[in-house]
Image (tube, rainbow, N blue to C red):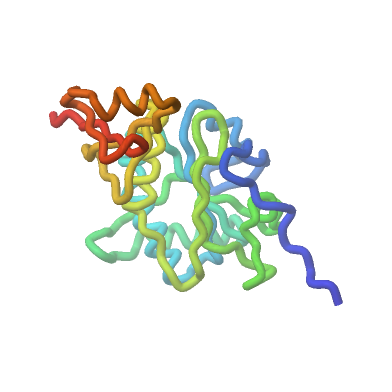
Length: 226
């Protein structure tokens, strides 16, 4: 028997984020139209009242203001019902973990019982036909998918890394650079590779104190320390 098809397709980096209308714990939304001009982290989780997801929602909620300061909104998704969502988020407020307590989840959590949104974003994969995997889509101000992360059910997400990716994408867009391995805000950045022999020669012979090259194709710009 042919295996049941669970996905309608997975948007790729650089694609327009698939549009949808949804009911959430914060009212109805039209995505991504309602978030024009803002960055968005759209993330899914397998089910309400699951241990790993509970710690993740507590962490995301505790960092919501940090993301807002980066012009970034949070949108969650689960294949559970709206009423299950509400009950779970109310229970989260009663919990205390890792220094977090009285955590109120104010960002929208999508009801996706029919799996319409999950399938549009490739969130339902072979491990289950009734649960969304632990996915993260970082979408820019133009509604373009810029980063995709998938985690197995057993592994909680690293939210400092998710925030670092947002910072790196915004830095790259703003300054037209790239970020090296393990980049953190304030670290030196990579300038675009030389596009001609002349430019490569100029860079290698440059006396600019704000820039240095390991070789013609790998040049860095020093970040000014505040």
